Length: 132
Image (cartoon, rainbow, N blue to C red; front, top):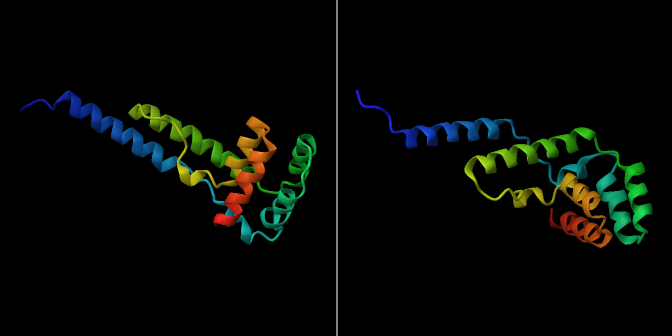
């Protein structure tokens, strides 16, 4: 009996690992998913923050005190990013997040916390709320 080529065997193992990671990777929710929430945080509070220019520290405090989105949403996003990074490294490709994740609340919030750029926060939030 012939031996299976090792290159093909490695490719099959990589594919199996990738599919196993994909299976457990949560999908970040778009901002439109929060429109159905009864507390109207995204369509009310965040939209109000768009039209009220606050200093960075006040905006950060407002977000901390008003954010009523379950922590699970942020944990799912972080988990998805970690798993996506693992999948990309497996195939040796760029680890940039998928475009479909850019209009998710966790992405916008993580980006704001990392950069502190209030203008970018307003632009991202305004774009995402109006594109869904």
